[in-house]
Amino acid sequence: MKFCAFLLAAAISIAVVPTRAAAPIEEPDYNHPEDALMAIQDLQTVVGVLARERGLQGYADQCDLAVRDAETHAMIYGVPERADLRRGWTICYR
Image (cartoon, rainbow, N blue to C red):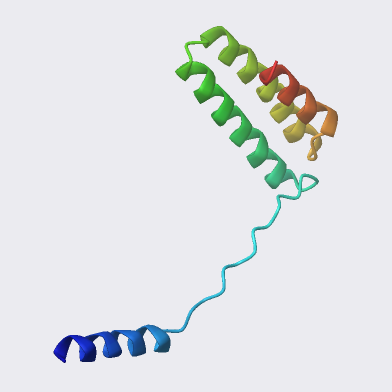
């Protein structure tokens, strides 16, 4: 009987706790300089780590240079050209 009362109390407390709806995931706006730079830095980090984990140091260095080039372009012009982002992805995933 005590166990049933415990379960009933637990069910009521769970039902009373307000639940928050999950916030929708926002896609980065690649025309916004800060979002574009974050995307470039994420690409550099992920690909560099994966390449180094697999013992491909030269490959990782080549990828870092390509991504850094696109990052520099983004900082100079404010908004990265999609071609530079695409070039970084292409070099990193060959």
